[in-house]
Image (cartoon, rainbow, N blue to C red; front, side, top):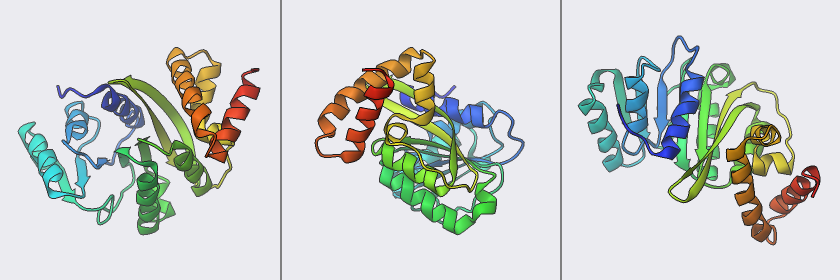
Length: 231
Protein backbone atom coordinates (compact mmCIF):
# COMPACT_ATOMS: atom_id res chain seq x y z
CA UNK A 1 0.00 0.00 0.00
CA UNK A 2 1.37 3.40 -1.00
CA UNK A 3 2.23 5.41 2.11
CA UNK A 4 1.31 9.09 2.18
CA UNK A 5 2.29 12.04 4.32
CA UNK A 6 -0.25 13.19 6.91
CA UNK A 7 -1.18 16.06 4.57
CA UNK A 8 -1.76 13.79 1.58
CA UNK A 9 -3.61 11.29 3.78
CA UNK A 10 -6.04 14.08 4.61
CA UNK A 11 -6.47 14.84 0.92
CA UNK A 12 -6.89 11.15 0.14
CA UNK A 13 -9.67 10.81 2.71
CA UNK A 14 -11.58 13.61 0.98
CA UNK A 15 -11.10 11.89 -2.38
CA UNK A 16 -12.29 8.64 -0.83
CA UNK A 17 -15.47 10.33 0.40
CA UNK A 18 -16.01 11.95 -2.98
CA UNK A 19 -15.67 8.59 -4.75
CA UNK A 20 -17.88 6.67 -2.31
CA UNK A 21 -20.89 6.52 -4.62
CA UNK A 22 -19.11 7.30 -7.90
CA UNK A 23 -19.90 4.91 -10.75
CA UNK A 24 -17.75 6.62 -13.39
CA UNK A 25 -15.02 9.17 -13.87
CA UNK A 26 -11.36 9.37 -13.02
CA UNK A 27 -9.15 10.72 -10.27
CA UNK A 28 -7.18 13.62 -11.72
CA UNK A 29 -4.24 14.89 -9.66
CA UNK A 30 -3.09 18.32 -10.80
CA UNK A 31 0.51 18.94 -9.83
CA UNK A 32 0.97 15.31 -8.82
CA UNK A 33 4.70 15.54 -7.97
CA UNK A 34 5.58 11.88 -7.22
CA UNK A 35 2.21 10.44 -8.23
CA UNK A 36 1.74 8.83 -4.82
CA UNK A 37 -1.84 10.01 -4.38
CA UNK A 38 -2.90 8.59 -7.74
CA UNK A 39 -1.23 5.28 -6.93
CA UNK A 40 -3.03 5.05 -3.58
CA UNK A 41 -6.39 5.84 -5.21
CA UNK A 42 -5.92 3.09 -7.78
CA UNK A 43 -4.70 0.63 -5.15
CA UNK A 44 -7.93 1.11 -3.24
CA UNK A 45 -10.08 0.97 -6.35
CA UNK A 46 -11.50 4.46 -6.01
CA UNK A 47 -11.56 4.89 -9.79
CA UNK A 48 -11.01 2.83 -12.91
CA UNK A 49 -8.24 5.17 -14.06
CA UNK A 50 -6.14 8.12 -12.98
CA UNK A 51 -4.61 11.14 -14.64
CA UNK A 52 -1.65 13.16 -13.35
CA UNK A 53 -0.59 16.53 -14.67
CA UNK A 54 2.68 18.36 -14.15
CA UNK A 55 4.03 21.53 -15.68
CA UNK A 56 7.62 20.23 -15.70
CA UNK A 57 9.10 17.11 -17.26
CA UNK A 58 11.01 15.90 -14.18
CA UNK A 59 8.05 15.65 -11.78
CA UNK A 60 5.90 14.22 -14.59
CA UNK A 61 8.43 11.44 -15.11
CA UNK A 62 8.46 10.67 -11.38
CA UNK A 63 4.69 10.28 -11.42
CA UNK A 64 4.87 8.08 -14.51
CA UNK A 65 7.53 5.88 -12.93
CA UNK A 66 5.51 5.48 -9.72
CA UNK A 67 2.35 4.47 -11.59
CA UNK A 68 4.18 1.99 -13.83
CA UNK A 69 6.10 0.49 -10.91
CA UNK A 70 2.83 0.00 -9.03
CA UNK A 71 1.37 -1.81 -12.03
CA UNK A 72 -1.04 0.91 -13.13
CA UNK A 73 0.67 2.08 -16.29
CA UNK A 74 -2.16 0.83 -18.48
CA UNK A 75 -4.93 2.60 -16.58
CA UNK A 76 -3.23 5.93 -15.99
CA UNK A 77 -1.91 8.86 -17.95
CA UNK A 78 0.60 11.59 -17.15
CA UNK A 79 0.53 14.90 -18.99
CA UNK A 80 3.07 17.71 -19.05
CA UNK A 81 0.76 20.70 -19.05
CA UNK A 82 -0.29 23.77 -17.09
CA UNK A 83 -3.06 22.77 -14.71
CA UNK A 84 -5.87 21.10 -16.64
CA UNK A 85 -5.02 22.58 -20.02
CA UNK A 86 -5.61 19.95 -22.71
CA UNK A 87 -7.24 17.53 -20.26
CA UNK A 88 -11.01 17.63 -20.94
CA UNK A 89 -13.09 16.73 -17.91
CA UNK A 90 -15.83 14.11 -18.03
CA UNK A 91 -18.83 13.39 -15.82
CA UNK A 92 -17.86 11.71 -12.57
CA UNK A 93 -14.28 13.01 -12.42
CA UNK A 94 -12.73 13.91 -9.09
CA UNK A 95 -10.11 16.63 -9.51
CA UNK A 96 -7.43 17.12 -6.87
CA UNK A 97 -5.42 20.33 -6.70
CA UNK A 98 -3.20 20.12 -3.63
CA UNK A 99 -0.01 21.75 -2.42
CA UNK A 100 -0.36 24.90 -4.52
CA UNK A 101 -0.90 28.54 -3.73
CA UNK A 102 -4.47 29.75 -3.67
CA UNK A 103 -4.05 32.09 -6.62
CA UNK A 104 -2.76 29.21 -8.77
CA UNK A 105 -5.78 27.11 -7.79
CA UNK A 106 -8.17 29.92 -8.70
CA UNK A 107 -6.45 30.35 -12.07
CA UNK A 108 -6.58 26.62 -12.88
CA UNK A 109 -10.29 26.32 -12.02
CA UNK A 110 -11.18 29.52 -13.89
CA UNK A 111 -9.53 28.30 -17.08
CA UNK A 112 -10.97 24.80 -16.71
CA UNK A 113 -14.48 26.19 -16.28
CA UNK A 114 -14.07 28.21 -19.45
CA UNK A 115 -12.69 25.22 -21.37
CA UNK A 116 -15.26 22.65 -20.17
CA UNK A 117 -18.44 24.59 -19.50
CA UNK A 118 -21.04 24.53 -16.73
CA UNK A 119 -22.70 21.29 -17.87
CA UNK A 120 -19.47 19.35 -17.24
CA UNK A 121 -18.54 21.08 -13.98
CA UNK A 122 -21.91 20.14 -12.47
CA UNK A 123 -20.77 16.51 -12.53
CA UNK A 124 -17.23 16.97 -11.21
CA UNK A 125 -16.00 17.10 -7.61
CA UNK A 126 -12.98 19.18 -6.63
CA UNK A 127 -10.70 18.43 -3.67
CA UNK A 128 -8.54 21.47 -2.97
CA UNK A 129 -5.67 21.95 -0.55
CA UNK A 130 -4.25 25.48 -0.83
CA UNK A 131 -0.92 26.26 0.76
CA UNK A 132 -1.96 29.89 1.28
CA UNK A 133 -4.64 32.47 0.40
CA UNK A 134 -7.47 30.28 1.64
CA UNK A 135 -9.75 33.31 1.98
CA UNK A 136 -9.26 34.21 -1.68
CA UNK A 137 -9.97 30.63 -2.76
CA UNK A 138 -13.16 30.37 -0.69
CA UNK A 139 -14.52 33.73 -1.83
CA UNK A 140 -13.81 32.85 -5.44
CA UNK A 141 -15.47 29.45 -5.15
CA UNK A 142 -18.62 30.91 -3.60
CA UNK A 143 -18.91 33.67 -6.17
CA UNK A 144 -18.23 31.22 -9.03
CA UNK A 145 -21.08 28.95 -7.95
CA UNK A 146 -19.42 26.23 -5.88
CA UNK A 147 -20.81 24.71 -2.68
CA UNK A 148 -18.63 23.52 0.22
CA UNK A 149 -19.38 19.86 0.94
CA UNK A 150 -16.67 19.24 3.53
CA UNK A 151 -13.46 20.65 4.98
CA UNK A 152 -10.71 18.98 6.99
CA UNK A 153 -7.53 19.97 8.84
CA UNK A 154 -4.31 18.25 9.83
CA UNK A 155 -0.95 18.96 11.43
CA UNK A 156 2.01 17.63 9.46
CA UNK A 157 5.67 18.26 10.23
CA UNK A 158 4.98 21.35 12.35
CA UNK A 159 2.59 22.92 9.83
CA UNK A 160 -1.21 23.15 9.83
CA UNK A 161 -3.01 22.35 6.57
CA UNK A 162 -6.62 22.45 5.53
CA UNK A 163 -8.48 20.79 2.69
CA UNK A 164 -11.88 21.50 1.10
CA UNK A 165 -14.22 19.40 -1.04
CA UNK A 166 -16.53 21.37 -3.30
CA UNK A 167 -19.07 20.78 -6.05
CA UNK A 168 -20.35 23.17 -8.68
CA UNK A 169 -23.99 24.27 -8.54
CA UNK A 170 -23.77 27.37 -10.73
CA UNK A 171 -25.42 29.68 -8.19
CA UNK A 172 -23.25 32.55 -7.03
CA UNK A 173 -23.27 33.21 -3.28
CA UNK A 174 -21.45 35.48 -0.85
CA UNK A 175 -19.67 34.30 2.28
CA UNK A 176 -18.55 36.38 5.24
CA UNK A 177 -14.94 37.30 5.89
CA UNK A 178 -15.02 34.92 8.86
CA UNK A 179 -16.20 32.04 6.65
CA UNK A 180 -13.59 32.91 4.02
CA UNK A 181 -10.69 32.91 6.47
CA UNK A 182 -11.74 30.10 8.81
CA UNK A 183 -13.85 27.92 6.51
CA UNK A 184 -17.68 27.63 6.50
CA UNK A 185 -17.67 23.89 7.24
CA UNK A 186 -14.79 24.16 9.71
CA UNK A 187 -16.75 26.77 11.67
CA UNK A 188 -19.61 24.29 12.04
CA UNK A 189 -17.18 21.58 13.14
CA UNK A 190 -15.64 23.96 15.67
CA UNK A 191 -19.07 24.74 17.09
CA UNK A 192 -19.69 21.00 17.37
CA UNK A 193 -16.58 20.59 19.53
CA UNK A 194 -14.07 19.23 17.00
CA UNK A 195 -10.73 19.30 18.86
CA UNK A 196 -8.54 19.23 15.75
CA UNK A 197 -10.38 22.23 14.31
CA UNK A 198 -10.15 24.04 17.66
CA UNK A 199 -6.36 23.66 17.61
CA UNK A 200 -6.29 24.88 14.02
CA UNK A 201 -8.38 27.92 14.93
CA UNK A 202 -6.08 28.74 17.85
CA UNK A 203 -3.22 28.74 15.36
CA UNK A 204 -5.15 30.92 12.89
CA UNK A 205 -6.04 33.40 15.63
CA UNK A 206 -2.36 33.88 16.42
CA UNK A 207 -1.45 34.31 12.76
CA UNK A 208 -4.34 36.66 12.08
CA UNK A 209 -3.48 38.89 15.06
CA UNK A 210 -0.31 39.83 13.19
CA UNK A 211 -1.71 39.73 9.66
CA UNK A 212 -4.70 41.96 10.43
CA UNK A 213 -2.43 44.99 10.47
CA UNK A 214 -2.05 44.86 6.70
CA UNK A 215 -5.05 42.78 5.60
CA UNK A 216 -8.56 44.26 6.04
CA UNK A 217 -10.24 40.93 5.24
CA UNK A 218 -8.32 39.16 7.98
CA UNK A 219 -9.04 42.01 10.39
CA UNK A 220 -12.77 41.77 9.73
CA UNK A 221 -12.67 37.98 10.01
CA UNK A 222 -10.88 38.12 13.35
CA UNK A 223 -13.38 40.63 14.70
CA UNK A 224 -16.28 38.43 13.55
CA UNK A 225 -14.67 35.35 15.10
CA UNK A 226 -14.18 37.07 18.47
CA UNK A 227 -17.76 38.34 18.43
CA UNK A 228 -19.25 34.98 17.51
CA UNK A 229 -17.04 33.20 20.03
CA UNK A 230 -18.23 35.58 22.74
CA UNK A 231 -14.81 37.04 23.41
